[in-house]
Length: 332
Image: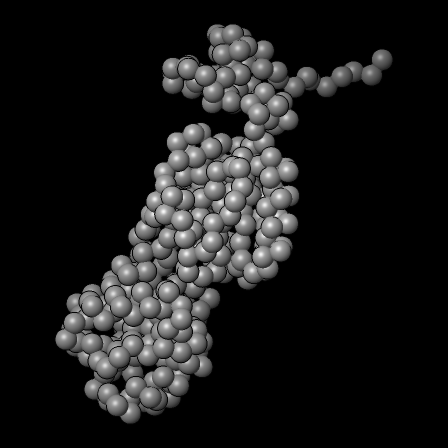
């Protein structure tokens, strides 16, 4: 007779090692029931010692949950949604939950298809995000939903967004602290809320040091290069330029170098987004604002977990940004 390998540990083995009943062990591992934290921890240690892995299908059947969360995004490039997803996965994995990514490609019909599919799969909740910070229409599903980066227009929903005003203000405060006194601002389209918010914060924070009016254009290096020519024709004494994106800032740096202006000795330059492939490849590397999107994703997932547990937190939450200083303002 062929010999059998060692049998996999069962929940009864975990219960015996922890000195509790099988029912108590199940509640501890599924984070249900009214148990003391010491009991839960003792059961978790026993499970870890034995190498016990709960059966996900059995756990779902016993709890009435799928332990799955959907993420709906319009950001096909993944520029913003991927770091948000990574942060959300960090929070969800602690509860042994899986994340299902659905890219709508900005197609309302595709979005409705994915929503129907997620609901039919009995996901426990949904995270909605996108590539723009404009508020979006809420989705109508019978499960908890939290919005990340792209907030819901319904104030009763839970939305987590970037503090663009604070982020832009931090770049200007940095420039002023370095002694800069003639600050210009080059940013994206005026139709974009993020561009407007960053421009408003720049003007307010710079005060008398602000030069002219915010210059709006496309989110591109080409616009950054062109805007420098326009700016210096009217304000040749500018000693700092804050930009609404790293792409624009990189174009600004390139054009200033071509014109014989040193960055940062003659003109300091700041970006926004901390898009690493853009910010660190710039000449010189950019001082910029990190949106802390992974942390935003973690906070969003935790809020969704609270909602799934029956404790929603409605309203709009602004997450702080982080200023990353590099050679475009500090020099070498």
